[in-house]
Image 1: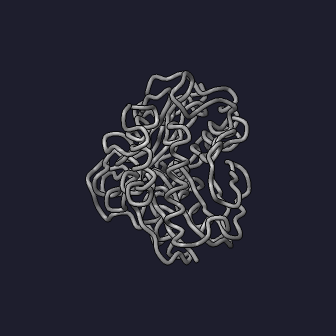
Image 2 (image 1 turned 90 degrees about the vertical axis):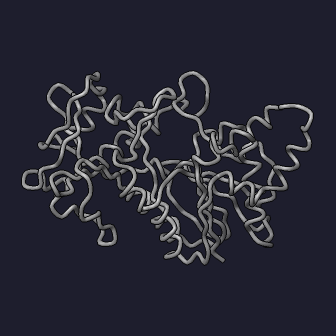
Length: 345
């Protein structure tokens, strides 16, 4: 079944060529494959384009905690020092995964760690020694598999490219499109059963690639602290309270449900499943891990730094205090984002 067509310009010629090469004669891709191409393909992917994406200026698409300047990095340093529970911070290297080119939250930030480095998108994931492994909105940008409950069955969604270069979302036919993943079996890990029944038209966007990434990180031979800032939900929330799914597009600071518009030029994201990421840490030998709101995380683990910042500028509403309010206030980023952290000795 094909979803209603939207009026949108055709995809770029470069992306059309990449899509057709990958799809072959079928002209169709599973949604996660399409999302991988649109975000990470070395020629046409959104995250490999040489252009600003993050910030509040013209031409950017979204802002994150890093848009608050050095303050976010300073808060993270203070929290990590407390979470290391007495270990000497100078024995640890701070590794940021997925930082923007030229970025990194500790750029121009004083810290007590042995070193700070970034592993950028597309670079090999090699982690060893004593580390603090940090990420900010990395897991929500991993490819999603999309499913819809229709007439008593879960059906996987894919993307079709027609002869005119127009993209549309389709329900994959298991008899005809078996090479794309048959919805009759869903081709899902046995530990990821979809609900036996739910309301007709219910969407679930499965963040399976995010879970795989967490498992890879935990499988690397390193010891220390894992800290991931992101937005996500529990498995119960994904399967019971998000009937439209969680996949969204962002372009020029506007959120959209049109996931196929201008592929390669807009961001695509979806909520992570915190249960899955926490399970990956448990399986990897992290003795303890916690999920907190961003507000709670900083209040609990960087409280002294926050108090000192507020006290030092008590007589004025400075840019740093405004940034602090953006990061902590529940109506801003304080509750929108969560933090998963755990320690492996």
